[in-house]
Image 1 (tube, rainbow, N blue to C red):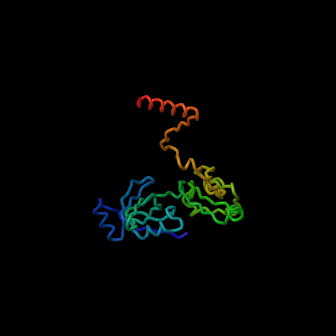
Image 2: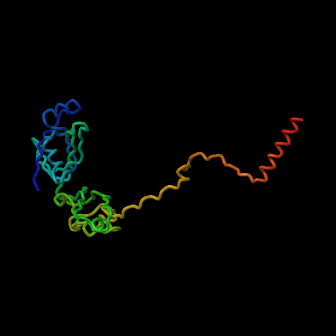
Image 3: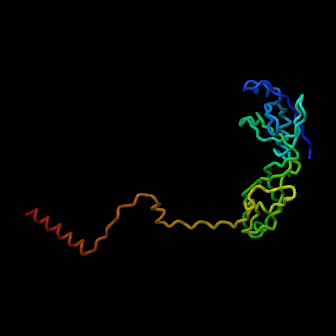
Length: 234
């Protein structure tokens, strides 16, 4: 693994205007915190931090912060702020790291191989979880966890507890039953909606109820109507 060094200087001027002037010099404001020492505002080299975030280990990279007038400090990138329009780094938080103290980190899970459930059985591979949380010493943090899923058939899944981890060095913090990927069958097409349901969807106002009358009732009503008409004529 390549060793990264981030050059830094202590910041004495704070605020938005000072940060803007700092960025014009190729550096960004940062805060170094954690451990027994108090938080320290520093200015760091923008390109060096960007290179760490683009590296294989990404935010889990352990690097050296070389502060002018101070001792070198091992650290990790804890958080960062990016300009949403230009995509440039604006600010970064750095966490001091003790190499003999276990820490918790999130590591990406990458699968490879074509599952038999997809290749032969016509299923679909669905990814549920892309990273898991681990606890280990800083020197034991893996860049990624790679798993071969070629034997995965329809209805089968890979859980966090199935990941190949060294229990002597790494403890899984994520729930072991959490699904990482699984193969599912193609969903059957939904049944066509009956024509009556399509014409009268649920929640639509009901049409007035039509009362069908028998032939005898209709004839009686017609007879009464004719009789009233004759009475009026007379």
